[in-house]
Length: 345
Image (cartoon, rainbow, N blue to C red):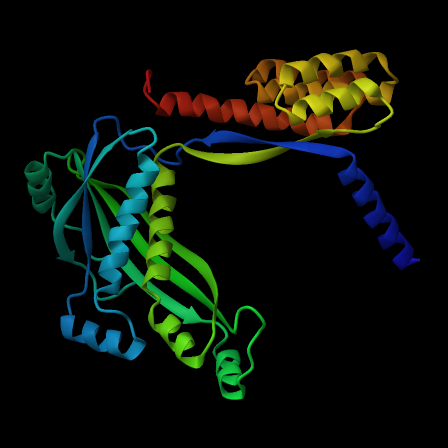
């Protein structure tokens, strides 16, 4: 009985998926935190240098880290942060060339910089605040070392890719925003970013070279970690998938609307779906739902809400209520974004 139930549920899910078309829409996500209005220019400081240089060299030797690997990765963090903020230019970001020493502990924020030092940096770089990277650590872990050794010893190679190499590049960094006006740390945030790396090697020597040459993987992880913080302080784009009905196929107008949507003729699709409102109640409910999606694609959220509401209230189309709530949430996000982005941007 249990197997029959599982089979029926799977069959129902398959039928539902087959009855849906979809479209991808790019939306804007509001910043989680926006700097005070008087902070326009920000100087970015790398304060992650180790106090114990000799100990750091020993660590590099033991862990096989490339010389200055973390320093390279920090530069990529800053690049990722600046790229994420470049879309709307809410802030003017400038990198400080000097590198400051931080804490010997790579997972704990150091004692804050003195406010006299912050004021001096702001004056020197004509900045309104200092954004300091004060925690930074990177690592690269080979996740299948036993398999690599076994393949190398036995000479077992996978067709087309040789020896399988799997690893994880990990970057952990913490950042602080020093506000010299309020003399407060206005933002303090810590990010850990992991990136899976998969590749192949055709000999044991290739495998060793790959493991040794892990700098680019760590640098890429650093870049995306920087983007993570950048997307925290500025609006960022993301994509969503909206599903809509493409069945029953026997209804000519419903299918005509789907075909028009496939060639980006959304106005024509809405016209076809409007004609489908004269069909039976179930088909009319689906047509109303599709019209709502069409208006959202065209950028008219109010009309999209109107038709989602009709689909639910007039035809009892259950998916329309959830879609209506999504549209309301989108409008709330857009209202926040309008407050975050100055007029004319």
